[in-house]
Amino acid sequence: MEDVIGIIMAAGKGTRMKTEKAKCVHKVYGKEMVQRVVNIARAAGINEIITVVGHKREQVEEVLKDSVKYAYQEELLGTGDTVKQALPLLKGRKGKVVILCGDVPILRPTTLKNLIQKSIDNKEYATILTAIYENPMGYGRIIRDIGGNIKSIVEEKDADEEQILINEINAGVYCFDIEELTLAIQKINNNNAQKEYYLTDVIKIMNEKGLKTGAVIVDDNTEILGVNDRVQLELVTQVLKIRINTELMEKGVTIEDMNSTYIYDDVEIGTDTVIHPNTTIKSGVKIGKNCEIGPNAYIREECRIADNVKIGSFVELKKAIIGKGTKVPHLSYMGDCEIGEKVNVGCGTITCNYDGKSKYKTVIGNNAFIGSNVNFIAPVNIGDETLVAAGSTITEDVPNNTLAIARQRQINKEKKNK
View (cartoon, rainbow, N blue to C red):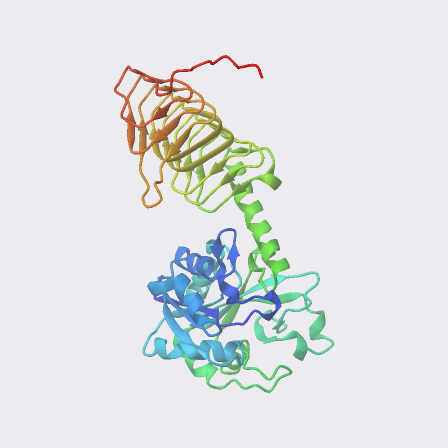
């Protein structure tokens, strides 16, 4: 693939969000929208990214930090003006530039990669992502000639009676030749209903110059859903949630209730594992084969769960490594811990991992049996083949093959009659 640079438009105010935040920093399923768009671009092979910021730009910069370059749009004069602010950073560059919207956060990287590859293979100076909508209201329409070539894009407010009936719409994702985009964008004007500089006018300018342009029609229209208000934010979140759960089930995972199961991005789950209802599994978690998770379980980031593990109801794991065949059946918190193979963790067990300043680790060896209602005061190491009596508070290491009891002796006192 030739040199490809990305531009993300993230300067909008998001008035309909009714928010004090920059629109693009609102989260979709745990990640800021603009971060999701950056991740999509990188997954499609775009390593150099320019983000155009404006309204509350410091919030966007706080999310992305120095992972991207920045351009600034002081006045919101339209998408053409937005992209124009990034062009000085492209001076002297050749190749392709991909334009993305910071509020379209669930585009599949494969779709973007296909768009770029078609533009390169067909030697197109502009390649547009389009979609077919039964009801295209609110979108710019794709105008083709009788041969099917794209002539221009007309915004809905500027469309005539014939154009308004077209059901192929502009998805707002573009791949341009850098040099020709730089030339064309200087020629656009704001002679339109919105009095804005439309990036879409570049297509007509390139066609008038005789440059080849093309399009890719997206297979799944949900990929191009944008976020302009909190209702759309929730819709996009639900679409992503269903997509992730569906992909896992297609790989051999049983999810008993998709509606109540929240599995975030980049989670790996082995075949024949069952996820019971009301379970949350955060990003980056890895779960092996033939496990049973939930119901009402919360598996947080950085957990690693081996094969044949049971994580039961009302269990929370945080930075936990769980060995093969281990059971944490119910009502337990296991944080900052490493648990060996074939361990039984009794009901009500917790690792006391935080002293108010620092986090500490609990290590439990293979084949240990942990009774109910045990507190591990970390840092502490529990050996192999150990048995920890119910109700114990463990403050010291327990050697291998040892019974540990750490509780006060029971005293019964006779009640005095009044």
